[in-house]
Image (cartoon, rainbow, N blue to C red):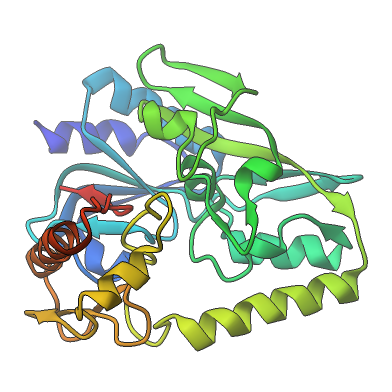
Length: 300
């Protein structure tokens, strides 16, 4: 498509940072990925809505990127528009209800809620995603998940070109209405928290973070857990029992610390990661008859 014409239209929008051929590896936790034809960084909701209207008008391919976690970008890049929500970071509290922009990092908001003495999101401390991404995939850990706290969300529908308020999110394990309807772009989220003791919440958050440091390969670029938890099993245990800890293809390696993670050990490519995922899936299926479903989102 004619990206020059698209960029000219986008350039008319106030509060929109536009970049051409942005290297996605620099903006993902995996540190993998080629260039996006166009990358835009809305400074606020109004800029995002104006940009989305233009994108819908020309039917340009669109990818939404928050913190760039849980994402594997193609080596050839993405021939479309990458919309980064990271500059949309407004949040506010009204009693135990919180209103949060989609671009707010989940860890940062968990800490802010704790400072307000609000409980219910301690599990999110240390999850390396944005609020929008967390809602889309119903992120969770240590017995909690986004379904426990999300009340409503606001989105822009690229098909109808209208703004909607969603109350029924159809949450399930790593699923939501947004995963099923990628044409709906999350703008903001309302959360129902509860009053708690700030010190006790902080202690719980630190406990969760220490568990992550002890068990997860946080020292290496990665995209979080690679596979969904199969019913009745743990993906990491299955992979470890197959003797795949440390297995490496190119620069991608099954973490020796936690087999449920793949790390970018040495300039890994997306192709390295995908090949390693295929080896893991085939090996686990052969050994245990269990099909591992990938949790990563592929882009490009």
